[in-house]
Length: 102
Image (tube, rainbow, N blue to C red; front, side, top):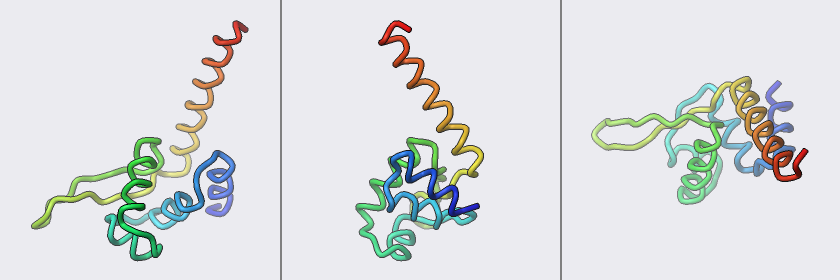
């Protein structure tokens, strides 16, 4: 099932690194440095991608205060990601129809 989800994400224009981040966070809760270390990516790059993926509803972010303040990330359930993509696609199609006066 995970490979099917990854393939759908790629087809929807999600970058390969985003798919790797999503796969890594399925069922796990990690911070920026942990993700960067496991995927051999720069923390700055990971931070940028996490921001985008969180904005798109693919990941969830939780504030953590353990002697330091930071965020931990986890992947949304695949069914939730699918619902969000369907809703976004529907909105875009309605916008296009309105533009074309259909």
